[in-house]
Amino acid sequence: MAQAQTLAGWIALMAEDRGLDEHALAAATALDIEEVRAILSGVVIMMPLPALDRALRRLEGRPH
Image (cartoon, rainbow, N blue to C red; front, side, top):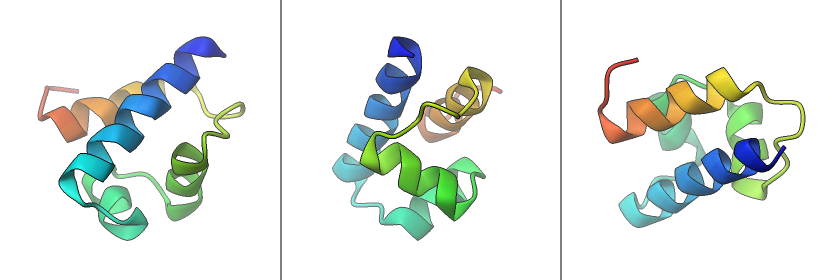
């Protein structure tokens, strides 16, 4: 649980830093809009860690 919240926090921080709204973040991370809303609101209990990790990697420009 803590890992999911940490990954979501980094994603939200990077989105804010880059001025990405939820639609731009969804496009940048290949997540659906509901997953992005969960990340931005910090409610990531049901999100699998690999999905959050892939989203963070896409934002950072690292290989998946």
